[in-house]
Length: 325
Image 1: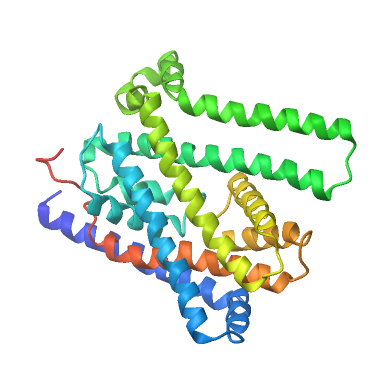
Image 2: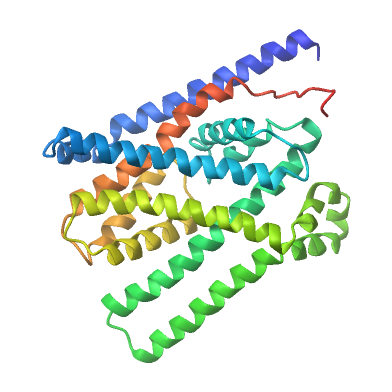
């Protein structure tokens, strides 16, 4: 393929991705009535208060994805050194791809195309390690919050509740042990003949020591803290009679349920609002406010970054630089 032909194909691919993303986003935003409910709720509040609170929530969105960029930079450091700005660009580009692909699969492609061609498959494996770290926290905190929810709001036999606690403990330990021994997965893949020929791609798993995995998990925890704070601020602001511990419990359950269900980012809003409505009904009758808050976080954390990421799509290098490869 000639250099000129590569440029034409690359430009067409980028333009197609951006147009497709904008089309998906536009359709979902125009169909979403929950955002209109959120707008109606805000119309009753002072403008300075709206600007202050929403401005801070938007700022936290940038902090959230900034932490993800730092995490991505660390994950890939043993394979290829990238600047923080390039890490930020790849994260936002990945969000644009993720918005119209099942289970955010496109996010992998959006990121690794910022790496040199020979390191892209390894980059997918490295990114998976970071996602596992985030999943560990989501599942551990979610399992704890679910047990608290059952204890407080479900009429359950004590023996069954103790059994639930036992399985929750095993569940949490499984994820923690698996994450801090991710190199076991490398050994498992090496033990299978059909996968040995691909060991150059997944051998990065053996490079992550417990100390490094702890640092990555710490970044995952900071991210969890940031987007939990976003939910907490909006719920506490618009439904002030809620207790802060109840909000944190429900938000942890919300993350937990979302992580277990396969979805498309754009249709994920239906899963988010239905889950939030069901669990929050135990502590408040303000269903409209709950659904509106959840929809607004979806807009801030998913849709706005996906729109911002369209700029970085045009920075992609699909065919790579031979000198860097």
